[in-house]
Amino acid sequence: MQNALLIGLSRQMTLERQMDVIANNVANANTNGFKADHSLFEEYLNSNAREDNFIGADRRVSYVQDRGTYRDIGQGPMEPTKNPLDMAISGNAYFAVQANGGELFTRDGKFSLNSTGQLVTSDGNLVLGTGGPITFQPTDHDINVAPDGTITVLEGTAKTDSIRGKIRMASFDDPTKLTKLGANLYSAGSATQQADTKSTVQQGYIEKSNVNSVGEMTRMVEVMRSYTAIANLLQQQSDLHKSAIEKLADVPA
Image 1: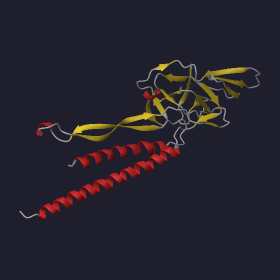
Image 2: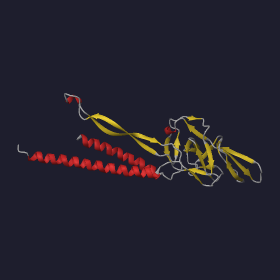
Image 3: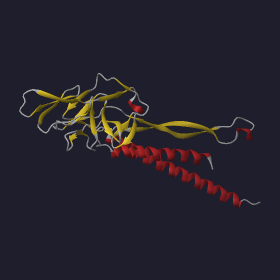
Image 4: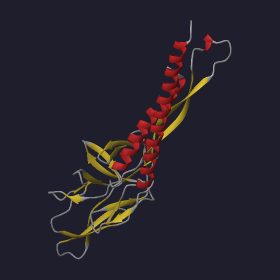
């Protein structure tokens, strides 16, 4: 196969995978706490033939290779909800939750209470405090969450606050090493937990996705145009090759 076709196909393959990343970002533009992914590309140099077939040094062919993706861990915008159980983390920490038989992490702070009074995520996973799951009593009211994550309530007709727990905020040395599991959950992966003294909890707020919808749609259009342009170029190369063969066939022997 001609080098031009190989180079064009390598670019089309990376564009297809880039489109998958962009489409996933767009699909999660309204997902609470979602962190956008972006593609990484690099030049891959390879010989276009065996070097021992030529007297001189062989020219190297430059292909396109998608090396991987990286996660944008930037803070998403805060949206007020006026729901006392909704929480957003200001900082790089994550909420710790009990899910799939272990401890996982999320930035989605849209919480509620289950039938037994335990604080849970929108998917029903238990939200963990520093002492385990956080449980409220049926007579609890006037829920207050301090910036450090301490949850206090007024119980029944009591005039003094009762502590129900403290939200555990998990922080990591490199959040980009967290592994996405779907359903807005992460596992620690190769990241190491560390002490966090800067992150705070904002009660009555939800962190929205940090996806830039306009930017992602612009990139999607650019990818589609690039893919079409390469497809046209490959077709022209194919037509040129076909025409050359036809003309060679007409040359008298």
